[in-house]
Image (cartoon, rainbow, N blue to C red; front, top):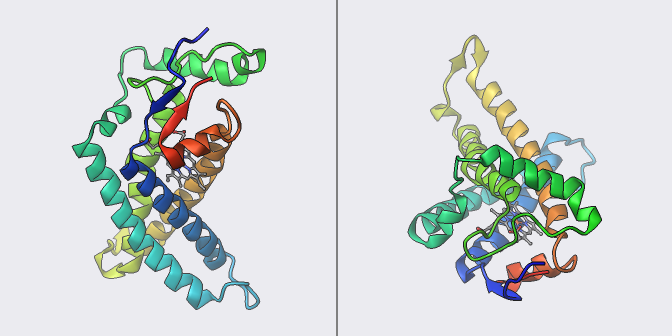
Length: 207
Ligand code: HEM
């Protein structure tokens, strides 16, 4: 049995504002990005409109990412993104076993949410890769496409712009898939809605 307090204040206002902005911008980027990628004469969003909205949302995402990055540097929230190396793989496997077996047998979570550990090991690794590798990568490659003059002309015989475009698309699709998985895992809480409520009121509800 877990004996934690029922409600923990884990999502400060700035994280909630950042997350809401980030989620809206990412959804806008995914919709307009897909629209640009699969544009045909009859595409619902006009190609030019999709490009303009995509560019503006990308610039706003860069600003909101800067706010997240600086916020994590200046507040205690950054500590949740530091992965202790010792026993990392064991903890990851334990959490994986819980998600694939333990959860369905109604076992207690191996890493219950606490003030010290807001994220379980799988959540933590995903958020670190997402926020410190994938998102910066999609943003930087996006700027490279917006200003082709700053992009390397060629790399091992391939056009630098084509490669930047390819990496931007791969990163965008990967983030979209991670986002779907992220939303699914957010439904695993005290109730299917409780984690979503946490991101509105700041309080995590324990089982
Ligand atoms: C409609 C889209 C989204 C929904 C409904 C959603 C939902 C949530 C919820 C309920 C949480 C709190 C529970 C938890 O920590 O797991 C959360 C946290 C988080 N989400 Fe999302 N999310 C969305 C999109 C995104 C996107 C696009 C990203 C990044 C590209 C993202 C990154 C994060 C991060 C890093 C946290 C932890 C924040 C912290 O407490 O430091 N989310 N999300």
